Structure formats: structure tokens, C-alpha cells
Length: 203
Ligand code: HEM
Image 1 (cartoon, protein in one colour):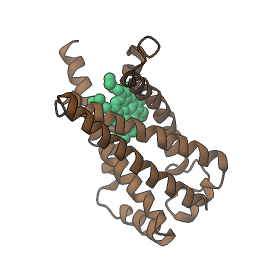
Image 2 (cartoon, rainbow, N blue to C red; image 1 turned 120 degrees about the vertical axis):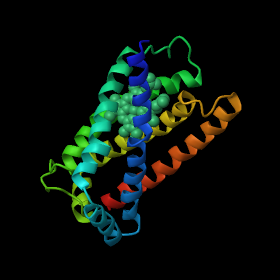
Image 3 (cartoon, rainbow, N blue to C red; image 1 turned 180 degrees about the horizontal axis):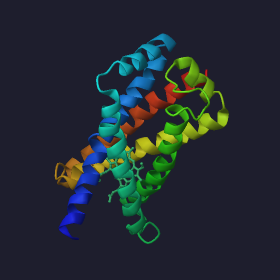
């Protein structure tokens, strides 16, 4: 591996957590406000609109890192060796699932952003509970969102587990086992919050 490849891989790994992973946590927290009620959700999205330099933050902290992570990730997934059929132990399956969920997340995020941020649903820039509910009233849109959400959360939480190894935080088998439990816990928590919010929008 050349030095450039090494740094690109490290940057790819880092962007998965900072800032994209943090954005995912914030995003799930915001949509979970729907569980408190339509008014609470609308207040949360209205608050985001008031943030200073919103457009610059969206481009610098979300769009560009996501584009880099997504495009370099597609390349990494393409050249990775999937040994799942030869050695089918648990970690090999999760390695494979990390790449499958990368493809799903890539397609899902493009569609989701087009639909709800760039007015693809025909409702303009949707940020109110009512408008999101109208979009989620379509059972196919709802089901595809549930699949995209679970896949993206798996990709993030399993990625967090490998990230901790990549950066030398969890070194021995015991710390890797403990962080495995923590990442599965986070996986469960984010799915409960995200899927419950989706169901709330669907009514
Ligand atoms: C847009 C589509 C995406 C693609 C194509 C993609 C691709 C990938 C690939 C192939 C890997 C494995 C890298 C390796 O082990 O060599 C990876 C790791 C990772 N991804 Fe993504 N990803 C995407 C979106 C996301 C999102 C939305 C998040 C966070 C919310 C994320 C977070 C992570 C994390 C934390 C890792 C682990 C980094 C590490 O092991 O050090 N990814 N991604």
C-alpha cells in the first residue's frame, strides 16, 4: 500500500465517524422528536433552520465528507476480497455485510436526499411533520426507508467497531468483545428510535 493509499484509507475511516457518524446520530435524534408529537418535531426542524451558516455547514460537514466516504468506499468495497463462502465465521459475515450495507446506504441516501431535501416528493423542501407524513403514507416509500435505515445503522455501528480497531483503541480480544456488545447495543437503540419515528410518521 502506498503512503497516499494509507492516508486515503485513514481519512475514509475517520469521515465515517467524524462528521458523518455524528450527523447520523443527530439526524436520528431529530426525527425521534416525532415520537413526542408533531409540534415537537416541527420545533426541532425549525431550530435547525435557524443555525448560522447552515448552507456552508451542510456542504462542508455533511455533503463533501459523505461524497468522499461514499465514492472512496464504493471503490474499497469493489476491490475488497469477500471470503464469506470460504471462511464463514461471524466476523467474515459482518465484513461482507459492511460492504453490502455500503451499497444500500449509497443508493438509499441519494434517493432519500432527493425525495425529502430537494423536493423529489413534489412537496418542496419538506421539514414539517405533516409533509413527511404525506410522503411516508406510501407503503413502498415507508418500507424502503425502513430497509435503508436499518442498513445504514448497521453500517455505522459495525463500522464503529472496526474503527476502534483501525485506530488502535481496542487492541486485545477482551476490549474488542466489550466494544462488540456496545456497538450492538447502539445498533438496537438507534433502530428502535428510528423505526419508531418512521411508524409515527406513517400514522
Ligand atoms: C454513502 C455510502 C457509503 C459507502 C459506499 C460506504 C462504504 C464503506 C466501506 C466500503 C467501508 C469499509 C472500509 C474498509 O474496511 O476497508 C466503510 C466503513 C465505514 N463506514 Fe461507510 N460507506 C457509506 C456510508 C456511510 C455512512 C452514512 C456512515 C455513517 C453514518 C458510514 C460510516 C462508516 C464507518 C464508521 C466505517 C468504518 C471505518 C473503519 O473501519 O475504520 N459510512 N464504509
